[in-house]
Length: 197
Image (tube, rainbow, N blue to C red; front, side, top):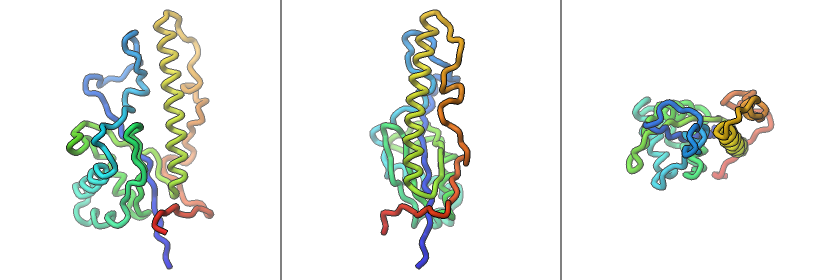
């Protein structure tokens, strides 16, 4: 029996704000949202896994036609979607994950009923869902630390005292090295985590 290998794409949906095309750190006392959080907003309530599937299928059809749609049809599945963090884990066959990746990269607007401009960022491609989940948790913790550091430095600069040293996060002490890049190659002991049996 031949085992079908899959890839798991960890995806972030970013929502750029049209009125703030140039992002800058918060400077006014009333503007307490750090620039690290300005893009990472929760998704609207109408956004769910089914809508994300439709977005991917439409994008693949637009870029690669019926041939591309047929290639991904059997293996495409949204394993996890959180509207609170705008994060998703998408499963697709190993041979065709780049079709899905390119369709997500070319997406500039969510479909109706959301109909909102967005940028979809593929953060990691891994061979097991466990690695994708671990990366999602690590990145969520990192973004919380960055937001706290930005808010802390903004409150210090508003108070009139300038910060002389960069925060630990900005200095690179945040354990954010991408040794393998985005794609995670198969290792000899890796097994696909599949719900299908």
